[in-house]
Amino acid sequence: MKPSLLEETLHLLRASNLNVIAKQFERWCRSPANVHKSHVELMHTLMVAHDHTKRSGRMDRFITRAGFSSTVSINNVWTHPGRGLTPRMLANLATCAWVDNGSTLVIAGDHSVGKSFLAAALAREAALTRPGVHYRVLSKLLAELDDDDRNVKKIMGQLRRARLLVLDHFAEDVVSEKHGTLLRDLLDARKDKLATIIVSAKPFDEWSLAFENAGTGEAVAHRVFGGDATIITLRTDKKTLPTKKCRRAIGKPFR
Image (cartoon, rainbow, N blue to C red; front, side):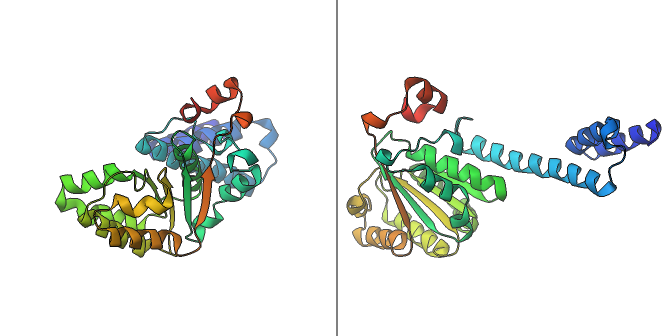
C-alpha cells in the first residue's frame, strides 16, 4: 500500500472517531509479517480490536456508574468450599448463561463478607457481553424515586428493561407501602424474563419485617424465591481466609 494512501486512510478513520481501528490498521500495514495475509484476515483483526474496545468501554462505564473499585473482577473473587462459593460454582456463574436465561440470583451472608463484590464482579462480566446492566442500592433507589416523582415512570421503565439488575442492601431498610408496591411490580415485570441479583444481609425470614405492609413484603419474597432462584450464602471462616497480601490485592470487601 502506498504511504500516501495509508496516511489518507488513517486520517479518515481518526476523523470518524475510529481511533482504535486506525491504530490497529497502521500497525498491521507497517508489519512485514502481514504482507501476504488476506483482506479477510485484516478485517478480522480490526473487528476483534473494535469489539474488545466496546466491551471494555461497557465494563468501565458500569464500574464507574456503580462506584466500584477497579479491582472488581471475577479473578479477584475469593472462592473456597468453606466460604460457600467454590471455584466451579464461580466458573459456572461467570459464563452468564443464567443471565441469558433471565434467572434470579440471591447473594446472602453477614456484613463485610464480600456480597457486593461478588455481585459487582458478576455484573461486570455480564456487561462485557452486552449492554443493559444496572446496579442500584435499594435505599438510594427509593430515595431517588421520592426526590423526583416526575421521573418515577422513566426510572422504573429502565429497571424493568435492564438485561441484568442488581439490587443491593435489599430489605435492610424500612420500605414504605408505596415503594413496596413499586418493588413488587418491578420484580413481577422481570420474573422469568430478565436476570436479577438480590444482595442482602438480612435473613430471608425477616424480609417482610422491612416492609411497612407485611403482605407486600411477603409478595416480594415470593417473587424472588417462587421460581428457580439460585441462592449463595457467603460465610467467613478464619481458617480459609486469604493471606493478608492476597486480601490487599483483592480490595475493600476483605479489609
